Image (cartoon, rainbow, N blue to C red; front, side):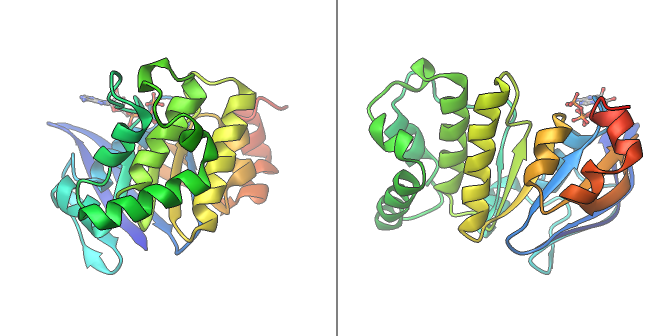
Length: 234
Ligand code: ATP
């Protein structure tokens, strides 16, 4: 689905990603965990076309997408939910969702809207509520719902637990699992390693702009180095 090989990228002359390689397969949740500043957000920016790699290749569904325009990637099914959620605060839940379908014709948008409401009944119940009056967890759910309106094949999430209690984080991560169960692959960037590893099919640990460990969620959650560095366990 998504494959990065030897990717280098950065900001101006400042290189941040060094020979980064990772893969996301069909229908799997892959978590990318690591400390502040490890380069997780930079990885997502590079995949979604905001930054252009200086070396290496990025393939999405077998096509090289290095430096492709973000709008073309969204139309091809690669959609990101940004960390700040970027909702239209004064608009309703339904209006925010409809905006997410800008790449699709009207009749498709109506069908997908029904699917999103079935997946997240909370959004259906609150369809007329103004987005900025939702709780943090509900806003995150809405941001995910809006991304689903573009009918992604791969959804990329940047720190969906930001500002949420552990309980609300679980609710959001349950929603991420529901997305995966619809056959949509997920690349989940999280500083909250314990919860991310608990739902990930596979995961990578990132340090200094590259991946240093890879395994299934349970493998990494049980790894002594991961426990010490990221899970706060001795
Ligand atoms: P965080 O959880 O703090 O967002 P992260 O793993 O996502 O961490 P990045 O945001 O990718 O890390 O940052 C990696 C490095 O790139 C950091 O040293 C950061 O200071 C630098 N960086 C990020 N954005 C920019 C920018 N726009 N210009 C210059 N340097 C940047």
